[in-house]
Amino acid sequence: MEYIALVYGGFSGESEISKKSADEIFNAFDTSIGQPILVRIIDENWVAEFNSKEYPIDKNDFSFSTEKEKIVFKSVFNIIHGTPGEDGKLAGYFDLLGISYNSSDVLTSALTFNKNWCNRFLSTYGIKVPKSVVFYKGEENSELYSTISYPCFVKPNNGGSSIGTHKVNSKSDLETALNDAFKYDTEVIVEQFIQGREFSVGIVFNKGKEKVMPLTEIIVDSEFFDFKQKYSEQGAKEITPADIPFEKASECQEIVRKVFKLLRLKKVARIDFILNDDTFYLIEVNTIPGMSSKSILPQQANHLGMDFSDLIITIA
Image (cartoon, rainbow, N blue to C red; front, side):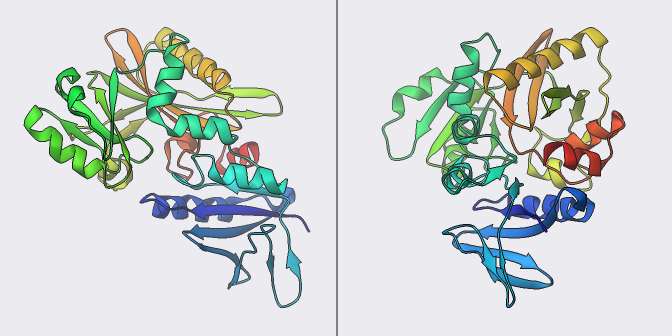
């Protein structure tokens, strides 16, 4: 029997979202490619959930032992949003152990998780991104205030799910937003606000073939696509496929292909955009997108005739 670790949890406020995705993946997993075992990683507590029991993970070789046998993993299905799954830390650990995994490698993960450096890198290749500045906790940042235009977005530079993110409409509200964002990261990015329609596009890559998903338009009834809008039952409307001319949709999909190749992304990604007038601005690259059956990427795959189990096989 070959075992695949479904690694979930993490060290951020996204751990509950990770748990939801992991549970649904576990229930839909095709066991012909391997027997899935949920592995929970929360701070120093790494636990395998096996046969209704919990067993501590031996971090020396990422294995665990039951009363009868030692279980080793053939590979890892990484579903940790945020650190340490999405920022490259776990990728480096698995590289050292020689265990294969389905997420992007150390360099790509670290780069895409850092919004500032990812945007700077992509902009050198002609990808449109918002203008931004970065504040560093504990450092003198006073010269940056005069460079900021309002409204703007304040975000933890290394984070996800819009946790600690604020839309700031005036200078008087900036300090409060910065202080809150600094609760989640030592670096805070302040981005130009771009008015327009918001879209998200998934891409999967398997056996040398890429499949770019149809665009999903995200329509919110609040200031922006925040944590509540993303995950509550009364959240944003997600329209797949988006009501957009074929030519513009194709243009966006070509940007997704280009970004996937430039960043050397692996297996799967979801990329978010704002369409301002006639120009797509890249907002964020998600290397471990939400994977509950109602998440954006599974919605897009379903529109192409790929059910949830097929999608899991493709990116496992």
